[in-house]
Image (tube, rainbow, N blue to C red; front, side, top):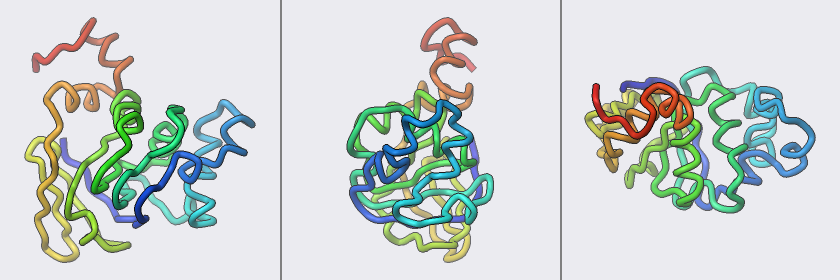
Amino acid sequence: MKLSGKAHRFGDDINTDLIISGKHKFKSLDIKDMSRHLMEDLDPGFSKKIAPGDYIVAGRNFGCGSSREQAPLVIKAAGISAVIAQSFARIFFRNAINVGLPVIECEDACRIEPGDVLEVDLDKGLVLDKTKNLKLAVKPLPKVMIKILQDGGLTAHFRKHGGFALKE
């Protein structure tokens, strides 16, 4: 599974209320509509700066806070291909995989700068910063998680396979 796009950089401890403010979580059930408010408390107009396939890159503890699935759903609905961070809050990480949003743990994510063009190969466990010609190792995802992502999330995976199928 290969992904390509531009980096949008954030720091440590980005909580789910910064990803999608609580004032928007309860106004609508339309995730696509909510995606217009992605990261707006940190970067007003952020949703207008991104293009399909771009990345959110962050430091440690991305997705801390509430366990609501709106945060990864909104990121995915905005067209972000993956979140690359040094570490993730455990519940956010699992929710992201469940909704089909790739989350990539990369200890060297801090070397990625805003605007860098990135290519991610989940199968090889590699982030290539094409702007700087850097190869950054990532914590590999288990095969079952890659399969879930390829199928579009946990619900789609279960519908397709009837369980945690690993067969190609």
